[in-house]
Amino acid sequence: MAQVTIYIPNNLEKKIKQKSKELNISISKFITKLLEQKIQNSWSMETKKLVGAWDDFEDAKSLREPNTKDIKREEF
Image (cartoon, rainbow, N blue to C red; front, side, top):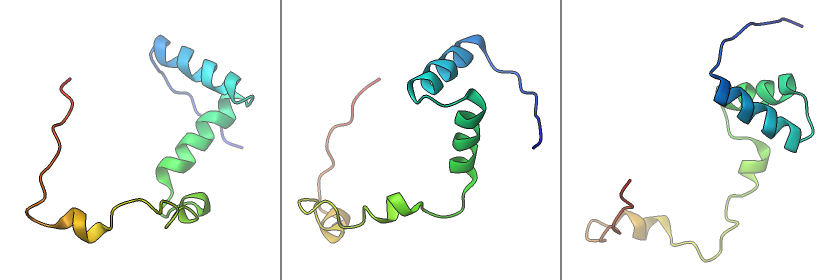
């Protein structure tokens, strides 16, 4: 298995350590999973299984209608 050295800000390191501890996995495994998710070329099976899972979701055609008013966005 290859080893890679990266430099990250201290605050990001703290977040990575905290999250990997919450998930009860090593930092290496946590970062590997993130990278795998980021570079994969297709939807995961978990995501594919969600298709049609929301019965009350508006039909996509109604969302595309030109006269539909958009909601006011949050301001940051």
